[in-house]
Length: 636
Image 1 (tube, helix red, strand yellow):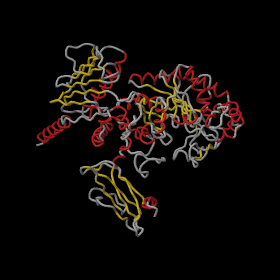
Image 2 (cartoon, helix red, strand yellow):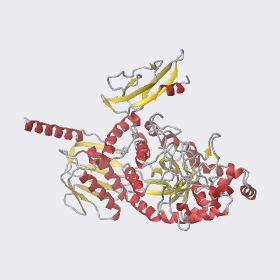
Image 3 (spheres, rainbow, N blue to C red):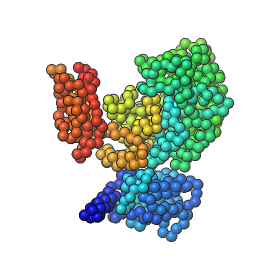
Image 4 (tube, helix red, strand yellow):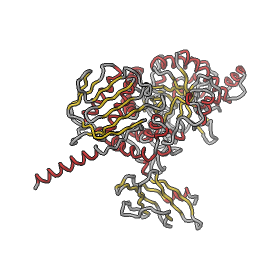
């Protein structure tokens, strides 16, 4: 009986393995331009031969395929430059296919073999990433998985990107991330065909890159007091607290990261944020400021340094700006940019330009004299003067300037490229004025925003759900597309303390942005996209990449009835979810009341607990909503 039971279990597992991999569902993110499914399946043999030309640009692609196909399957995978019958063939077109450009590919899966063709090595890499996504999710496992077979559907895929700039901004200034952690982030973004990593290297909280001849930038500017909690509301550090939290990248570290990214067809753009957001640099070199008290400044540790009550620009509580009227600031920028330009091959250097407060400038005699000398009538022109001068320095190093959209207010040269973050309108305005534009609006692409209700997410000042991110269209109607370089999502890290939380905040909204900048507009379909997202949740679980399940959380709407009772309406971001709830402090499951109509909270209820189910299984987190919070929202 025991032997019979074991055989039965094996047969059930085998049938399950076959059915999961042979259902013909293709869940590639971002969605390819064209998928034509054929009949049958390709079964990965236990001995795999990858054929590819021996060229440096393909080394990593081949190594990646060998690792991904062998680690989880336990199969033997080798690579050769020539074979009479390769399992997988990576082939550069001898006659370029005009549709594919530099990053497109054709992926052909037959019952006996696989061929990936492209005009350039980048296309072969992206084709290889799509191939991995065709396999069952267990292909992502870091340990061997015993399956009866590894099947993928027969298909012909033609694919190429909509936009050339497909970026993620990673803020390593507010919290420092090690070289290994940046590589981990690069690996994750390369899975989804991103090709630009924007490294935010400097800010009030830290200067993260070695500049030879300016040692205090990293000796002083890279370190602060370690605090944990809600960043921005920390108690100001005392003079005797240790400033031992932080770090920086040596120039050799930067070269290593650039090489690592380039092997994955990702460029790295550096950002040195000036003239605002410069407290770490000023703490290191106070003579970059026009404010005498700067000699006492230290890098910010999370205490409040800006007053936003009057809106933008903020009122600075301390002067965190490089002084536009101080010639030492331009000598400093020349030294920094000389080394940045030599380190980073990418054509653009980002110089920030955002959120520069003006209240210290307004009261500074040197700035007043500058305005008189240069014939300026408005304080905003002071930043324009600074931007134009540093742009000349950038151009003298053979690079181009990019900056946040605030620089438009002070006037910039035609050659300045604009990254539009305050919604889409400034990018549209810049494009109409024939500036090159990268769209990265808070409306769709700010990954530091909460993904669900404030009761379940790290609290920041705004929310951005997955379905809203998926609405991102980087090329707006009525704008000449030649001026839209592409799109980008931004991950600011004030409230992000470690790489696991960075992953949590990036995925799955990073899927939505990836599809918005790669896939044709007419291919976007929210229900289809979310079906693929759920498939990739399983992949990320096996790949040990963290993601947010916030999309399953219920959405609350609180209001008051005519007799001043609390009315609660619930909805969900995706269809097919059931919400179960309790008011009695117990933990609900599918045997508790299911939400079907608006609820009136019991008069003495203290809290509401909720959980979402899909197809009879829990998918959401157990949430606890205080009744007091709902009453506040209902203005009761």
